[in-house]
Length: 186
Image (cartoon, rainbow, N blue to C red):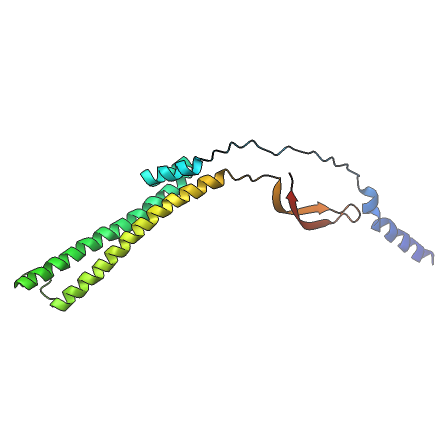
């Protein structure tokens, strides 16, 4: 029997050793003032849009989003390349068709009949028009991006309005509790 008392006493001491050896630390909460003074200029989005309308990419530079400038020029440049290429091919097939109507057969497309020349004209004309639409679309998208980005720069994002995960320690069990906090302060 004394052997069982010794084992129980040993398990009790070893089991509670972590409780006795823990140091109590006091935590102090310090409140920080996180409100930044943001100068709101209602004309900033209009300026950015105007700059992008004058020169594509200039509105992105005004917003200090320099990484967007190559995307703007890449999108507009590729569309412009396909417009120029399709326009050149369209005029080649159109000129060859006109020469066929005049009775000449010594053009560079002598291996094609007239119906093939007409279908090639329609194909390249459609591609040219579609490429022109893409050029205009990317140009307008450039202006809209600069305007929206300038408006969002002034958007107030601070601790007064936040939704974030929160991990805190339970004082009784010393286990981590996970939650979601929603803060809205005036």
